[in-house]
Image 1 (cartoon, rainbow, N blue to C red):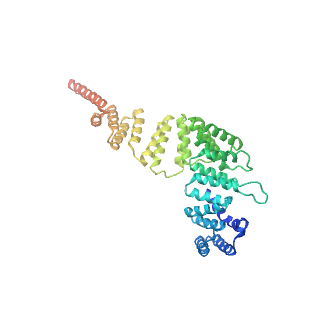
Image 2: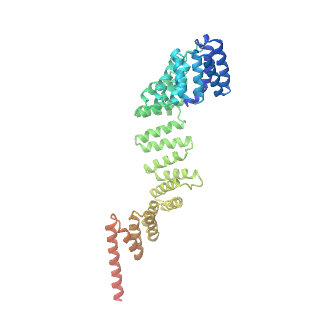
Image 3: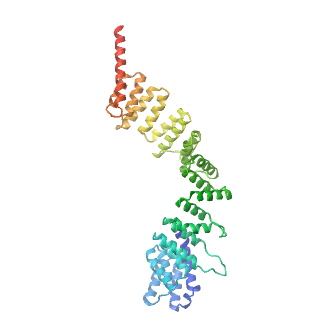
Length: 409
């Protein structure tokens, strides 16, 4: 954002430099001609040719230490993305003319590109301080203070950013821009001034309740304060003002699950999934799994099984088969349950839990042979050793009882 806005300034200030600046007024004819020709090449975006032209002039006139020359060559470097070469030239210009605001501003831009954020912020501040209004206008370009604030935020120095942003949003400036308010909100969060951030957002909602960003920020604050119901309310209002993207829909669905509103959670999970009709990517399996949990919480086991089936079709996973088995077991569908747990055991060979439950379900089904096979495997895992052994003993008792009954007849 900063670089895009300053590129225009880099070009426009050439005129200021060759005409309006007091230092430029005393330029010799040769320097004026070189700057004029250089400017024409820059307007045509022939930056390399412009660089050659001005360097040729400097080679012929090595004592030409004029501010406009340093400034223009620095601009050429900056427009070519050569920030490291531009920086010392801007500093040379400022050494000779410390109140030349355009040089401070463009120095701030290249320092920002070089990730020297605190120095960039200082340069933008100096640009604001030294800015001379034109045509008797007593206002200054407040965008410079905003650039300083962004530089300080980028440096992780929100305390330096705060006074500028509070001034810009105080009403002292005629037009308050949305990005200034957003930057102030971020500054308060970085400073852990959540109360001030909340006051700011509520004020903005009162002034402009149809702006979805303010509701998004309100939800963010409520989530930080672990007030998930209020966060869900804020995000729901935001969804009315602006259609949510997939991430926003999933967040809202997760919030509804957390606050115990599974039906609304399922609605937003389906909405997020429905944004792509194919849904074949692996991460969609997780979306379907969440949808299944929402259905289960809403006591809709059949719909949960459908969602799990779609999740498994995309990315078969032991965890998904275990959940499927648990649903089947709850409805006493023992054969389907033991098959699901058996799949889980095949996919996760380092865990005996699938074999244990598969054996238990097969036992309930009366399939002692399959039950014995699974339980024998489960017994090889330390965590399932005891339970598997007890169930195997129980099967042995049942088989002995069945044998005694046969002998009696």
